[in-house]
Image: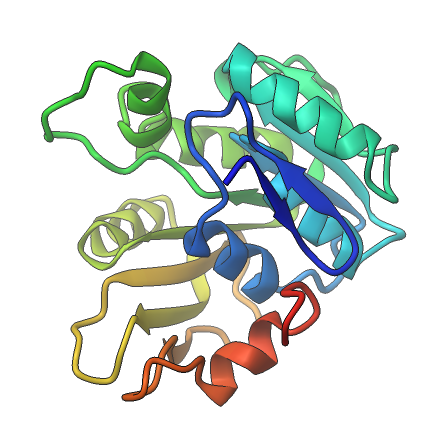
Length: 234
């Protein structure tokens, strides 16, 4: 599908290697935007998560960082044709981001394969494998580019989320909330949403869970409640 239509915006994905996915939609809908006046989406791809954050918090200043030239074409088009053309798109790797700005929130649907075989599509490899953005590099960027009270939200495969939490804990950061995600009631948890904070916050480490489909392969009430502001048919 070359275009994905949401209630308030559409995502064209002619060029980007990584298309609109449930992972990205989950992160954009789930992340807490409380007190996030300035937000940066790292590895924005088509611009999906940046657009979702802007829809949810129109007064926030949203920035999006992307290295891949093909993805940038889609992100630029999608932002320009959205209700929020003031989203600022930066053409660089986050490791090379040159800014004096400090963000309240960093969001990322990061690469997570670090030992799997690569395919022939180099752009897809960059989007999926951690040699383009390791967990440590993402955490370094979080430390550098966010405020003292900054937070970081990601979505990862469940197994990789455990390592990510260990790396964050080693830096004396705190797990604010998490949500384990499974496709159906009988499946194992396959994804985990995480929100990390530099400072401990009240009611930190809230553990949640989410099932996307019920036994009849219909969206669950929890999934509908989370995503209804975005999906056309909810």
